[in-house]
Structure formats: C-alpha cells, structure tokens
Length: 216
Ligand code: SAH
Image (cartoon, rainbow, N blue to C red):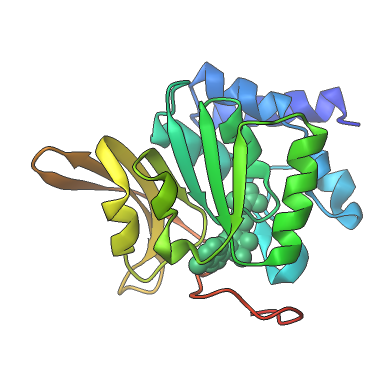
C-alpha cells in the first residue's frame, strides 16, 4: 500500500523542482511506485531516487520520469513507443496519459514482471515486446512520441525513421565530454530539430537480446 504522506511529499518535491504539468503530477500520484520496486526497497518506494531492480538495471528517479514525461508533451491521442521497459514504472505513467503505449525491453525477466504489474493495475493500453530497442517496433510505427530510458552513444536511426511527422522523441545520449544529456528531437516537415535539455545518468542502451541466464 502507498503511504499517502509519502506520496504527497514526493508530489510536493516534484513541484518544488519545477514540474508544472498537472496531468503528469496526477499520473505520478496515481501510479503506485511500491508495485515497481524490489521488496528490499519498499520503504524507499516514494523517495525521489533511482533504485536497483533485477538484471542489474534501475527504476528511474521519479523526478526524471516526471521531467521526461513533461518534455514529451503526451496527449490522450498519442501512440507512444518506450525503449527500456525495466520495472514498467515509466510505461505505467505514460499509459495514463497516452492512447496506447508500446514498450520494448531486452531482458525477459524484467519484461515478464512488468507485464504482471500492468495487468494488476488494469492498464490494458500497453503492449510489450522482448526485443532490441535499437530497432524500434517497425510494425507499430509511426509513433507520435518516442521515449528512450537507457543512454545510447547516438540517436538510433531506426527510431528517427519511426517518429511521425510532428512527433517528439526524448532520449539520453552520451556526450564526448563523458556525461550523458537528454535530447528532445522534433520531426518537422523539413527534418529533425534537436534541443539539449539537462545532464542525466542512465544505464547504457545495449544492443541485442541477452541469452537466458545472462546478465548483459
Ligand atoms: N523505464 C524504466 C527504466 C529502466 S532502466 C523504468 O521505469 O523502470 C533501462 C532499461 O532499458 C533496462 O531495463 C535495460 O535492460 C533496457 N535496455 C537497455 N538497452 C536496451 C535495448 N537495446 N532494447 C530494449 N531495452 C533496453
């Protein structure tokens, strides 16, 4: 069960750190983060911090989830692609704001657990796939919005191809200066416009799907 005081405290902190979109704040408030963290981290579920999950991955910090969701400018008409399902938390937040969410993960155990969580919450507008997100989800493209929750060396070509005209992508990429930054890319009739947002720290986006039992 979510502790109402802890939930209220997090929402207050997010507001304090500049998250303004009421729909985003409401989606965070209504998505029980307790359900998406490991049992050992339950007491910290509503802290504004990233936490470890299975397969050596992390559930993102709520501020980053809120910030990326806000910058993505999601509306109830949108079909959204998420690369990096992880715990499923970001996907569940998006499912409250979008028409349909397509989420791709390369680790089978994470994907299966996320699917169970979506079912438990009755989120029936999320489709999941075990696949290499570098390839996107060609059969379901184009997407109005694309969000990537692992850091890539550069923006994958397939994801640019699968972004609809007028679409927006938010993605962390490595910089030559050794840190990662969040980019927002808009597809206009004339090409792609890139905007640099904030420095971030994500797990790496890795190619391929690992063999069963492997951690990489
Ligand atoms: N959105 C997640 C964050 C998980 S961390 C959440 O809310 O919990 C990033 C995830 O991206 C990890 O689970 C990792 O396995 C996954 N990932 C990394 N490279 C990937 C790729 N090429 N395709 C799909 N998923 C990938």
